[in-house]
Image 1 (tube, rainbow, N blue to C red):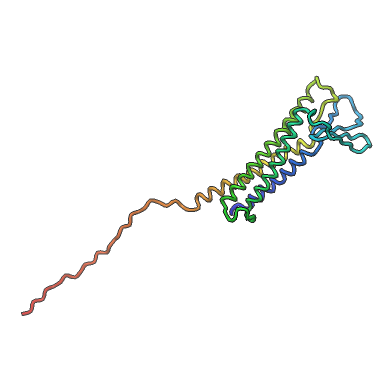
Image 2: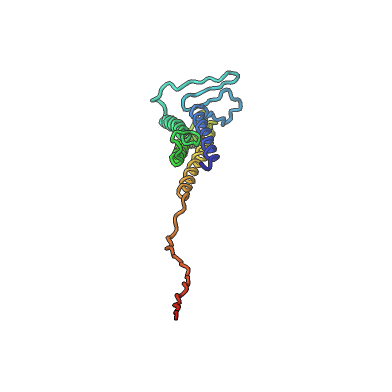
Length: 224
């Protein structure tokens, strides 16, 4: 099967995107406390994530606490949780399907067309995973920026963009690139299968060119 390095690059990027998606889901640094106003000395740092919030005080170790209630969470947080969980599941399924479509794996025998379709499906799922990651990350960032510049929001309630959001954007970009490589491989393989056998040209009637042979004429001999 041609373009084998393209498969490896697509699956490696998909795996990195899956790891980044999982890390983005678990990290608590989605929202960070903003240091604005006339406060110069900072005594504590607040982190808010999808599953917990953490407080780091001066000269005290980090203390984290999981959210006690699931139904009392804001709708934005509940939606972000659901989308990120779906993204993690989709990335894992896409990686498994892509591994089954590799040349060395004999899940589909030696059928190159089936392997190409598996890799194409894996690429589509990776792209879909990137979309699921991009929606909650961008939505949360938009809310943080909107509240930061809103004068009606108290200074203590203002937040900044956390590391998890940047990691989510990077993971979405990696997933898009990996999925695009796998989809491109699938398209190239289909074109290769289509043009493997050339289209026969117009049938030219066979002309039988016979050689003109001059036969010697029979001469009659008269005997007296």
